[in-house]
Length: 141
Image 1 (cartoon, rainbow, N blue to C red):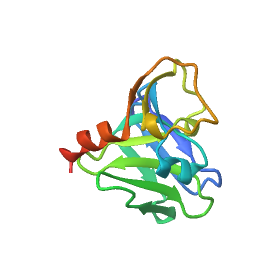
Image 2 (tube, one colour; image 1 turned 90 degrees about the horizontal axis):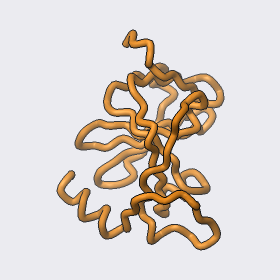
Image 3 (cartoon, helix red, strand yellow; image 1 turned 135 degrees about the vertical axis):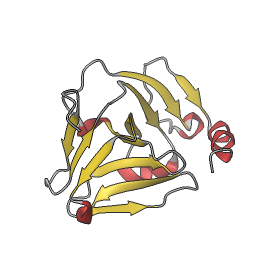
């Protein structure tokens, strides 16, 4: 990849370098139990497509977290690196990996029925419940 619009990210310890060709500035938030257990809160993710290069794969561990996706993290420092859809190979990555992004807009909240009552967002977004997501992904596996 040599596109000048590439985005580069590193984990906390620097063992893993991620380069993506594009980042969709319309980010999503997932409130599911798995995301909140994984990161201690909702997962704020940007869609990065399939043009992703991960350097230092020996430090990347991957967990098969659902029938439709897996999650990757640095085995050295624990930084969350990606949520990857199995069928398409598309990556969703934590917004925080790319601190220089501009024009970010929250446009979707997933598993809205699992959002705990101790937080809420004032952003007006589309929402999908657990049942809606499971119905959607039933056709994707």
